[in-house]
Length: 102
Image (cartoon, rainbow, N blue to C red; front, side, top):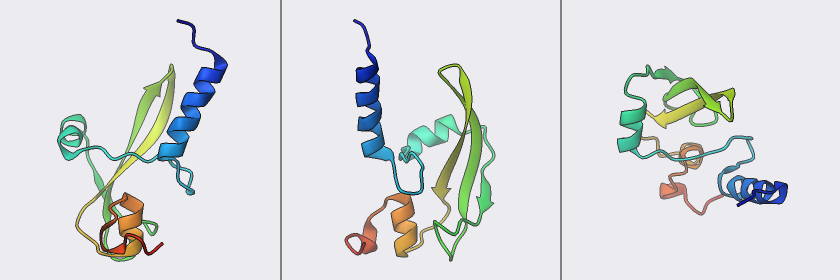
C-alpha cells in the first residue's frame, strides 16, 4: 500500500480538527493510569500558568520526544488541584460547571 501526499494531508487535517486550539497547541488528554506509567521517572514542576488559572498552580513537564527522526520539545501539563473557574476548566477540557458558557 502506497501512502500519498494527499493521504498524509488528509490525516493531518483530521488530527488538527480534533486537537488544535487557537493557542496553537495540539491538545490531548492522557489517562491517569497511562500518565503514571509513562511519566513515573519524571520530575513535574509546580508552576503558574495564567492561561490555565489565576488562582492555583499546575504541574508542568517539558520533554524531548523523537518523532520522524527529529527531536521535538513537548510540554505536558496536568492539574495539581481542582479549580472551578471557566478558564481552568476550558484549558484542561473538563467542561464542568462552566460548560456551555463560552
